Image (cartoon, rainbow, N blue to C red):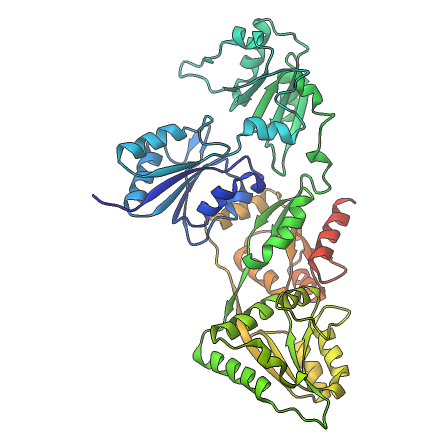
Length: 518
């Protein structure tokens, strides 16, 4: 039977979204189906394409969502449906990931596949804990060993050989076998004072490092109540962990933050927070959609025609003013012009067209089109923009506002009071996103108190959030809000609200830094 499907076996790295490869992300965004494992972090899951079918194939000791045979059959079945299938595994798929077995099954069915390697936990988790697995003054090799026991309950490990290597030993999936591993190394002649560490949930917001020696590691770990996933490292290089530690020193280390703004606007905020050590989960609670109904489009283009067809009056120096209240408004305005091949130079006939924006973010968006705003209030809010424009009424003949269909009434209320002529033109709609599979995992994370902050950049993101997450306790949410109107909406829900000093992304980041330092 002919089919056009294909499978990509992709390593997702160890938890930090920055550790999945560029190629892995590019393929993931085009996937029709994503079959993911339990070790794929929530941070990674939150950037998966919403249109894809997401299938949880997680396997944790004692609980298998799907057996390995069922996973193999699933990959074959989806590929034969002609779909682009991503098999997403934690770490690297060929390092104790059973990736080879899955590819054998695909090869037997003549299904095309590719492999995108991932960063294995054996080196990434060590690196995030300041431990170089090799160092010329300590050891010239490292060895990765599985801690899984055979069916007879015994480890298939040559401890005598390992102790003679004078190497860094990295044990994966070994927390249940920790006692046997430590005792096996000691019985084989390893010095009882050899440094050893257990690294829990490395490269994630819940990373912990437990330092001990081979002789004391088991007892130390028991007291710390360690949970999987765990990487165990034994060797002299472990002593460098306290000296070369870097991840723990980042200002937002151990902080996990949920971003609720639209997907297209998330990268800037996410990038700034990640550079400071935070882990970012993306859950857009609203989306913006460019107008597409005939009546809406007709009104927009008639308004644009009115702007560039208005005659210059030499006796009247009052100008036309185009107003944008969001970066999205700027983007959609020029995209709509491009759709009809309208040259933006027409907007500047007679040189009597000026621009006003609500704040620095919108101003930056406008600058990308080579236009610098003439008006911007000191405080970034609709009310202040309205006041600002009202004060300029003597210089403005007509105001054209291009924004969301359900924009703030505070802006036009101020204009109505002044009596200035204006046109309020919707160019996009704000809609609330619907829950999908990852939403359930995010809700579980809230139940487990895994989020330190949730950022809200508009009142609509708060409303969208509460429409999605209806069963969580809002009192436990520390909401970082971009302005008073957004904060008021979050307060009504009972959230613990922090308001950024300015309505900017940089101010949100500064607010989180200040709060986390308390």
